Image (cartoon, rainbow, N blue to C red):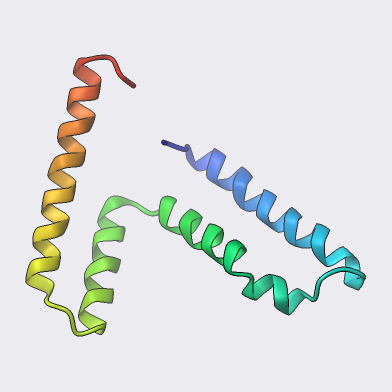
Length: 99
């Protein structure tokens, strides 16, 4: 699924609207509950990752792996494999008019 920056922006606005709706100006769910809601946090996190460039995502992933003490060599290999597969898929999709 590909989303444009505008579509991501609309979804971010929708998430804010959902928070406001369920908070109901203090008559609904507590704001602290909404801010910690696993579902909304997951959606917000996914959107923030979706709007980043591939280069930024790779750097973030490597930094995260490094801070967690994981082997960055294997992480870089995994990233290279994923990028190569993605590029191949995009190229194949363009060739076969699948997009």
